[in-house]
Length: 356
View 1 (cartoon, rainbow, N blue to C red):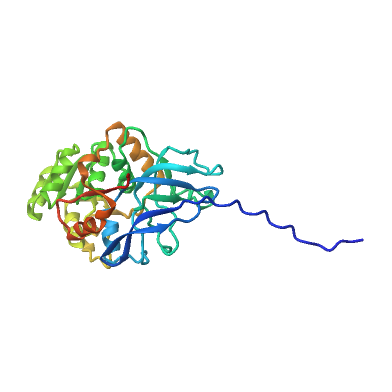
View 2 (cartoon, helix red, strand yellow):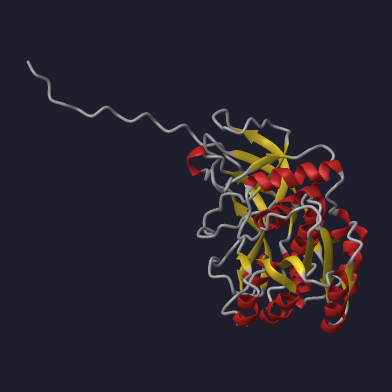
């Protein structure tokens, strides 16, 4: 007798691991920041649970997000994408080889319920980090979860992700030893770009309107770091590279700055737009055209670049400590972002310390 066909029952999904709750910095709405207790999602069979020790503010990304000028932010949002911590739980099925107690840096955590729709989620005391291999993007090395070398302190390791952002732009420019490179804008990305260009063997000229930021670049080994009004910087640039720079890396995010900078580029030079340019940016294309400029548009970060940045930090070749101006407790988050929005030039790197 022929038995009727029946579908086999699917195997039950393995139970998730309870991660508990966490304190989290929350962008409630534009210009409003709170510290909240949030319930974390269950950790799945390929996830890590990480007790965060330090998370770093990305000054440009988080400033634009808090102002409501990033279309990829949905309110409310747990901001941040630069975090370091110790593994509290590592699923046996996870592909990363990490174990409980290991230090790790990661791009962003899985969003708690009510905070979905955002790619950022790093300023929180405990994180569930997805290591699902099906979500991995090989060409972008994303997402990433990287072991932190013993020689790199937590606060500096948190900024390895932003150094990776700068490294993408430096790599796209294909720098060659002995070339002249100008870095305009010495925020965190500009600071790292200047150091990475120098490590690549380039002759580096770095410039910012703020003397405090030029001084921090000098503390990191960039001898030709200049500050002052635009006319003074233009004169210094002409003295450094009379025939024009081989490469310009702009991190200012300013259209007027771009139009001035391109005039210091040699014919057939390379121009890297490494800043964040919200809205429409007006360019004097004549200046770009007559020089037959090659222009590069880096965006985002690759895990491989972050790993290389961590190795450079561990070796002492890439310096971060002089760039960190503020260490905060999580309760200070509203004040930290007030400083960020104020645009004070005394502020550069800001780090939240999540350890008890």
